[in-house]
Each structure stands twice: as structure tokens, then as C-alpha cells.
Length: 260
Image 1 (cartoon, rainbow, N blue to C red):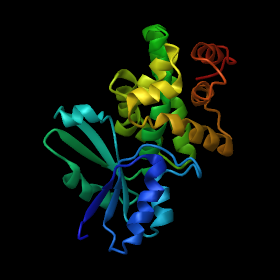
Image 2 (image 1 turned 60 degrees about the vertical axis):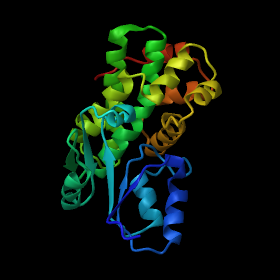
Image 3 (image 1 turned 30 degrees about the horizontal axis):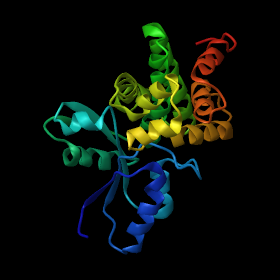
């Protein structure tokens, strides 16, 4: 009560329940800032869309970027981006969210920032598989580059600007999440490549790996939009036990040759 800003930092599948609880309080709504990177499974909605559906007319922003939580908690420097459809709102939030070692940029491309933060979790599972199988630097670089292309393809179809995916919420977050064992999604992929069962990996993590539910939502959304997202598709198949990590890599390599 009386807050000017509220940061929503739950799981993607818990967002609607949290918003329903907030709505039931009947309080004047502050600016709502989502720090959640994922899609709602039942609707394939981005988090800002879920917020708008539960609390129509609210001021909504999204915070995203290469922000591995443990490094932020340890005071290591990083940059991030806050996006809102209203650029002036995003600009006003820079000073609210910035700290001496946490630099925040403003952006008005809400779909681009949200899709970048969402799909990178799926690609990070693939990156963990790549490293777990010991496929080398060339394969990893190729995977990340094509993963960024898939992310951009989906984001642009949803109204994003391609340049956003070259920024902190796109390429920046992708590289951070795919390069560190601090990333829970990377750990999921690495564990799968080592032959561990998904249920055991998630139990050992003790935390939510957003890429696991998000992979299905991203693939459902891409089918609905008529888009091909081969890496996301192979990640989903592997998570569901339809494919294996090695077979998923083979399937990607055996796709028809195409123009970049």
C-alpha cells in the first residue's frame, strides 16, 4: 500500500496468481515492473500481456538483461534494460532501478525485450547440451548465433525491432546465460547431455529453470504464427524425452541447407 513501483519477481507460471492476489487488495495500482523471463503456458502470453489481461490500464514495464542473480547479489557490475511502450515511462524508471554497479538503459520495445529474455532460456538449455557433449567452441558459437536468429525471428513477428535483439536483452542476456554454470537453464542442458533424468536435474537445482516450461510455450506460439524455430523444437523434444541430446544435435545438422 502506498508504493509507487512494484517489481514482480515470481515464476512465469505463477504470475497470474500473483496478479489476482494483487487485484483482490483493491489498492491504487503502482507502476508494475516485470522481472520475469518466460511465457504463460496456458495462453503463450508474455508477462506484460498477462499483467494487462488481469489489471487492464496499468502502467507496465519489463526489466531484462545479462543479470545472473548470484553475480548481482555479489555486487559485480552489469547493465540491464527497462522497457515500456511509453518511452517516457521507461526513461523515468532508469534512475529508480539503477545502482552504482547496476546500469539501466531505457527502451520502448516491450515485445523485443520480453522475447529476448524468454527465448534465451530455451537456447541456454541447448548450450548446456552442447558443452555437456563436448562439441567444442565452433559448435557453441554456431548454436548461439542461430539461436539469436530464432529469437529475432519470433520477436519481429510479435512486433519487435530487430535491433533490440542485438542489445542487452537479446544478445547480452543470451551470451551470459549460455556461458555460465550459474545459469539454471544451462545446467539443465548440461545434465541432460550427461544422461541425467530431467526430474533429477530439477530436484538437484531446487530452483525454477524457466526454459523448461517456456520451451513448450515458445514452440506452441511459433506453430501458431507459422514460424520455424528448429533449436527450440529440438530442445522441447529432448525435454519431453521424444529425442536425446545427441539425436537433437544430429537433427539440427541434417536440416536442408539454406541461406543465412
